[in-house]
Length: 165
Image (cartoon, rainbow, N blue to C red; front, side, top):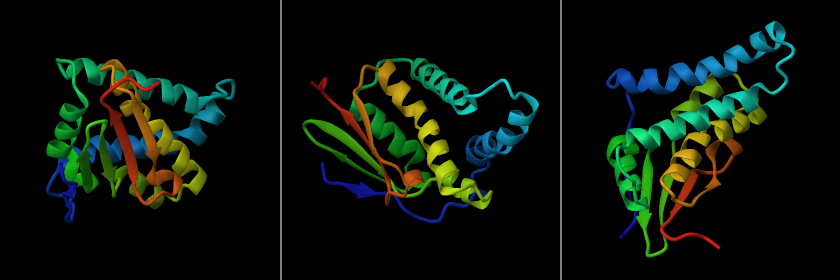
């Protein structure tokens, strides 16, 4: 399959559901972190707790898929439903399916909020727990090779078709 890409302006006014799904939660976590650390000083690993919550949502999301997904199913579903939002480029080889996302609404909101590059990287990595754990529930080996949040030019998710050694 030849790689291709969905691009274009994303108007949040045109898709308010996606705005609520992405922007609300991505603002809530970082905004609450300083408040929670003052209010609950005994909670020393808030990002760990958040990571666990996002991971659990990945497992729930896999259950909601209603069937076991193959890497091709996942990639095509992402491309159809979300490809335009993330400006996704996809490719399918004999060994793996690959998605390269060139835009992330979460990261853009974190930048607008003034989060440091380190916090952007942390929240990006935590957010990827959804994909890691959804893949795990489907029995799909998944590598998140590059991430916009750590300064890479795109997020690159590789879904392997066979178990890796």
